[in-house]
Length: 278
Ligand SMILES: [Zn+2]
Image (cartoon, rainbow, N blue to C red; front, top):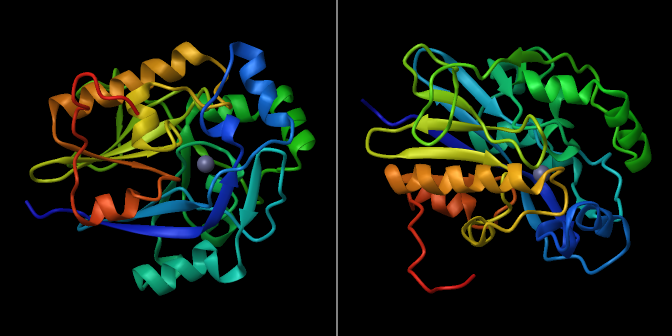
């Protein structure tokens, strides 16, 4: 079988609060820290990904940010109009936005979902759990507080993620009939977060959203400042590491400055040597 083409799109950059990148302190303390002004890290890419399947068309994973994004205490956005998804699809993937056949969101945060109106014609998918949480009153209140409204239109269809285990992931929903593009649950950063596993001839590619911001954080099992439950986020990070230990896997976090290079050079995740620290 031929490898599936995966295209890295970059819809601008974001600087995030150091305490959001690597959470500090227990429970609510960890999450409250990001509401206070504090040091911001270096600019990080805001990636979306296009998977080109020979018979099932173009599957877009996440839709990136738009120039309308408002800065918060925990994130400072640098997105020009030409960074947005429609320009990126034309310039980098060589297609019009209308040529996207399906859209899957890893999770419903603005820097992953705000580009949805650019591909409003295409069926939109997210995990059933994520859609339920996003529809709650608490989530609506948080969006008002942070000034991050849902995109319009926004009517995702639920992915149940109730199919068989795949590698280290406890369940799945295949997105293609040949099972080469698979949604797997990676809860933590949000309760219904998912990742997309792409089965290539001799390795896997895991489009891992914000399950971690970079591989050092993954290998440190250090939870971010956003995840509601530390234990859930940590369990997902352990599963990603276990999956990569069992099958050569290129892991692509949405905001890792090395993700695009790693995709281009098929750099699989190597276990950290014993005793090494991040
Ligand atoms: Zn993000």
